[in-house]
Image (cartoon, rainbow, N blue to C red):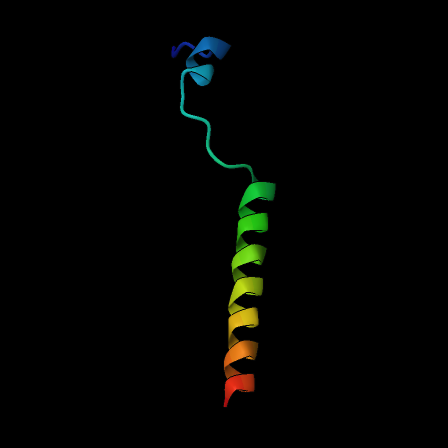
Amino acid sequence: MADKSPRQHMAQKASKSIKEKRADKHAKAQAKDHLEIGEIRKR
């Protein structure tokens, strides 16, 4: 049977939380929208 102690889980590299991933996604989307609006105004 495998060792399911917490110390094995804590040794793993921490990844981004779902909230952080969503925040990054929204920030990228807003930056993209902002650039597109700027390009339209220049035309």
